[in-house]
Length: 351
Picture: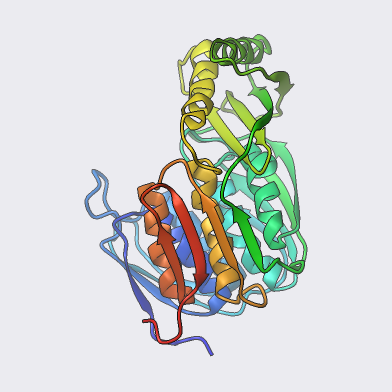
């Protein structure tokens, strides 16, 4: 039986805590309050992009109390309603983050579809192509089944992007997920996508990435793709490295005025840095796997199970997510100093 007493959470970490708490509140039926939300930032409190997340959660089940600029907010969940949703997120709302927020709650409610309009490609946060090429393949290991279709890319700032997602009911999850070591490198794919820009931009980006990787002894295949886009043009480079036991993914969205060669070089440098670590998962996938891992350990997906992996770096995002999932699900997240991560059911009698 879910508790009617709100969980109080430290909101200093901002959107990361909010997104995680909204997902878990919708799944567990437990309300929460965030205190000191982004209180130490230059622009403290709730911003329009956070309101977009709250309104999306309200649309499928619940009610929020929040004000623009406020440093306190709350959310009271209601049973998630399966069905089809069209969500207008505004010029700063991340369609990708909303999909990540709602995918598991909707799947556990029996499935449905999401038609999302907002930013799909931003320098910070997941892009549409990260969702399609990295996040979804990873969370399928936990039983999430979904498909995505991009209608048009929406590059920040003010992108008018749009994509559709079909979410099926949950498949049977495993009882154990273990990725302690990545194994040998087997393949590297470099893809550049451009929208509203000359196609030569993509060619220059992948050429720069390929050159930078070869200088480090890493060989890759290359693909350049055009994108339908809204009013804001843009580009990104996506690199996926397939290892014997895992994969790593790196996305760099070109910033306004940045030359294509720098975009490709930044993406190549991200993979090269990861190769110097001993982690099985890159830091972004490690952060994003923590929510489904906690749902598995907390019996939200079926019989409780465990997840064990290593990450290139234990980040503040990972630590913040670990604190939130522990509060909602009563699971234990052990973060080792060498990047080991264990997510398991809490011991009997543990607080």
